[in-house]
Length: 291
Image (cartoon, rainbow, N blue to C red):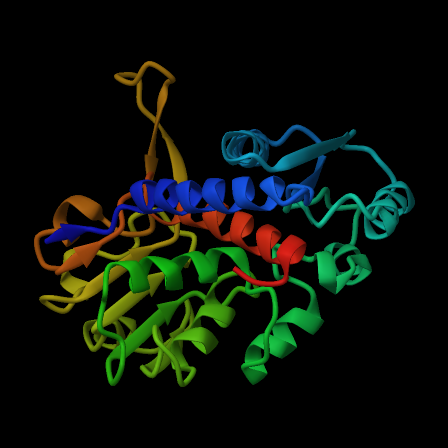
């Protein structure tokens, strides 16, 4: 079994971006500028946004963080989005999800300029991705694809099972893995909580991508020997033995699954850092037109 080290790979990508930014600025061009809107004080969202800001500082990007109260009106949030849409100094921005229940997430996503949508959630970018046209790819699926590519994981002709059908991860990664490209060219099954005989479906997978949102849902009995396992899930569980009082778990029972698979992503340190790397790559593209 080999670890697909997302943290190490993400740092490699950030080192590449640091060199690219230095080259840009040496030619008198401005560095890429990533902005983020954070609504409320969700601990996980704040941690994630802070990691993005630190990454920007580390590689020479400009970054801006707009913090709004949890009770902010939808109108005020949409006004902030419009300001970023028209701010020529900002190359790309994100609105950190989830949003409070009184705000329509789809309405907010639709209000983002697709040319600045570095999270890749806007329907225009999703549509272009589906057609194989140049677009901003959703950050987490793109991070997974980059990780597979950098570890030279064979995907052509493989049976890929994606567990989870969210618009953010499951659905787009199923499309990317089926495209005529590398990574890709695999035969994809998009499974979910209502899939019949789910254990057998998972056992057919050469590549198993798990984003179902249930801690340790995938056990070793559901994994084909030698399979590649990508664990997108991340959950907090109380653990008094830890200094911070909790431990992080994925959607896969890592300890037992790792004994059967050929490659596996850890939690933490797997898909999460690759999501940030993908976001930075998209922002660089927004600034420079190519990577």
